[in-house]
Length: 74
Image (tube, rainbow, N blue to C red; front, top):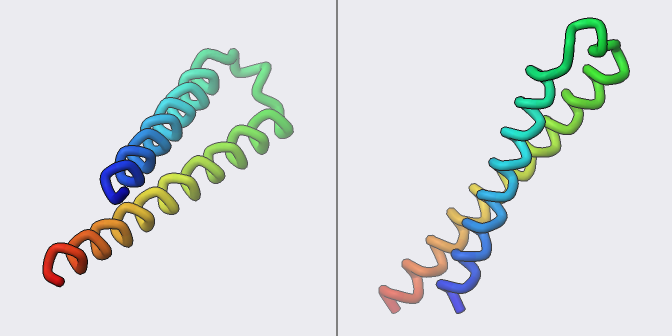
């Protein structure tokens, strides 16, 4: 059970990392005249959501590791 949840959390982390890289590459690929305020704000908001996802995955991995250690030492 613990290993399945950990693998799932790692999978979610990989998906979030790929999403972040795609957003960063799209921002670099767009010409400067295409980056108006709406586009820049939307990309910033999307990157903020991805960062929040990173932090949730990190916290979940820490909590899962703590429960795993508790299980080992019981």
